[in-house]
Image (tube, rainbow, N blue to C red):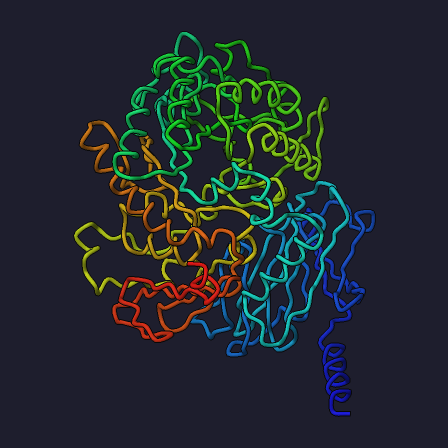
Length: 619
C-alpha cells in the first residue's frame, strides 16, 4: 500500500509540474509585436511544442518561446546550462543583464527551477535559434529565440521538453540528451566502433600531432591572387624534415601518435583551395611525400592530412579550378567572409563541392598512402546556412545533408573523419573534434609563474554576464563517442600554464600537439603564443621532449577515451570531480591549498585519479 501511495504521489507531482502551454512572442520586421499562447502535447511524460511554418506570421524578424519552467526569482534554487557549456544559477545580481548564445553546437539546453526541470531539445529550426537568459528587477527568464529576419522558415518549429528530477544537475541534463542521441541512432559509442575500425582504435589510444609545413602570409596582403601577384609560400618543415621528426619521436620513446600534415598541398596551408594538387614542390613534391608517409607508417605511426572543402580562393584560378558557380550564394549575393592565406575567403556550397571535388580528390589523396582520421577544416565549427543560388538552392537542413555525404565519404575513404569543433548536426559521422570550445578556461601564466604553488584558477573570470562558470557539458554528452581536444588553449598544453593541463584532464581530452600552431603575420594566435617548433635540431629535441610529457601522461589516461562521462561536479571552491562510466574519478584542484578527497591529498594546481576497482583489477 505504501508503494502504491508513492506511485500516486509521484504521478500527481509529475502532472502538476507539466506545463499546459508556452508563451510565444512574435517580433515582426515592421517593429510590431504579437503574443499568443500555444498548447503543449504531453506524451509519455515529454511535452511537445509544434508550430507549423504555415501558421507563422509573415515577415517575422524573430520569435521567442517562453516556458513556465524558465522563470525564477533571484535566490531560488536551480540552474541553466547552455550547449556551449556556460552555466549559471539564479543568484542575486548587482545589475540587470542579458546573455545570448547563438551557436547551436548541440540543439538543446538544460534548466531547473521550482516550476520544473527539463532538457530542452530542438527538432526543427535548430539553425535559426539562440539561447537567452535575462535578469530584470530580480527576475530571471531563460528562453529560446528563433531569428528569421523576414525569411520564410525552412521547416516547422519543433521543441521537446524532457522532464528531469527536481534535484537534477547539469550532468543529468546532458546525459538525457546523450541517451536521446543513442536511442535514436544518431551516433554509436566509440568502444563499439573501434572493434571493427583499427584506424579509429589507433587514434583513440594515441595523441594527435599536427605538423604545419608551409603557408603564405596570413592575413594575405593580396585579396584576389593570380599567377602574377601570388605571395611566396614560406616553408618550415619539408617532407625530409618531417622524417627527422619521426626519428626524434622514436629516439625519445614516443611509439604511438597520429600525425596530421597541414600545408602539404599546393600553395601550402589554405593556399589555393579547392586546388589540392600538385603536392607543394617546395616541400619536396609528391614522391617525397609518399616516402615520408611510408616512413611514418613503417615506424608505427598513423598519418593523415588536413584538407578544406569549405573555403575557396581565387588563387585556385592559377590551377584552372576557380568557378563562381560552386560558391554558396547568400541572400545579398556572393561575398567574401575574411582574408586568409589564399586571399579573400569564399564559402563553397557543399552540394557543389561534393559533386565536383570530394570523391575524386579523396581517392587521389588516399593513393598517396594516408589513412586514419582524415581532417577537413571548418565544417563542424559552423552554423549551416541557406544557399540562395538559382542553380543549386539549399535549405539549411539540406545543407547539412550534403555535409553528411562529405563526412560519410571521408570515413569510407580514410577510416575516419575529423573537423574543427563539435557542432553535432552530423555527429554520427564525426570521429574527432580538433577543439570543442574557444572559451579560454583561465589565466595564462608566464613561465616563471608556473612553479608557484599559490597560482590560483578563478573559474568565474572572465565570463559573460549571468554566467557563473564553464562546464564540460559537451563532453558529458559525447565523451566515449567522439574524440576531442576540449579547448584551443589546451593545444600544446605541456608548454603552457598548469591550468591547461588540468582542464585537458578534467574534461577528458585527447592531447593535441601542433608544430607551428602560431602562424599569423598579424593578430592573436587562437591556440596560444607558446609553440612547438623545429627550426633547429635543438628546437626539435626540446619540442619533442614536451610532447613526450603529454605522451607519458596519456598512456595512463587513454582508457577513459572509451568511457562516457557520467558526472561532473564542484566539490569545493576551485575543486572539481569528473566521474566516468567505468567508475573512475578524477579530482582537479585549482586552488592554492591541498584538498583531501577519497583518502588522498590532491596537491594545489594538480589532480589525482581514483581508478575504479574494475580498472585496478585489469591492471
